[in-house]
Image (cartoon, rainbow, N blue to C red):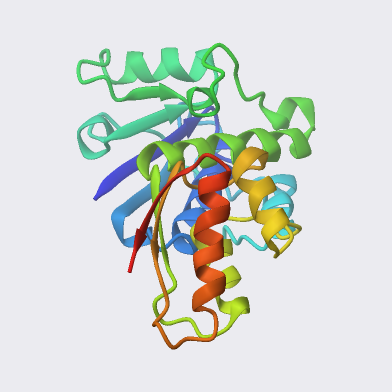
Length: 234
């Protein structure tokens, strides 16, 4: 079990958005039993308050509920209880270090590290009012975190009979966006440049007599042609 705590100033915008985006990703990818995900604040300003309405609406636009979430402040024992404590800007990081008396185990991380921009921050949309950019940045960071934790994705096609089932499995396991196409050209585009989960793949093929067996083998060839490390399990 990997335990992750997102931490921002008030725990009503950025950190709950990250908490519920990552929970949604974990559920779709079948990893929810392996992750504990929560969020907290470095301040006491919003204690007990729910997620800020524009942040709640932005999550809802993507089918994600944050029902029941209320702000809480970080506690000293959070450092012991969580494996990763992830902030959004330099002030969050300083406040966590002060609250936890340093970072002796190297657990504190800036969220933008996970999208390859360790010198960047995620601006607080409570001030900027730009919840679209906050969503985009936080989503990219959470996807980067998932790829750090789960670089190899298993595509279990073993029970599939139809092509549509192959794409359903890929969409969930690889965290496809709703507007991604469901064809071989789209698959190539996804693995060569569009946001997705998986740096390596392991394919469990359908039964020999399954109508979609040959198509599943072609999917493996597309991944290989795209330069992605792929293992085919017969």
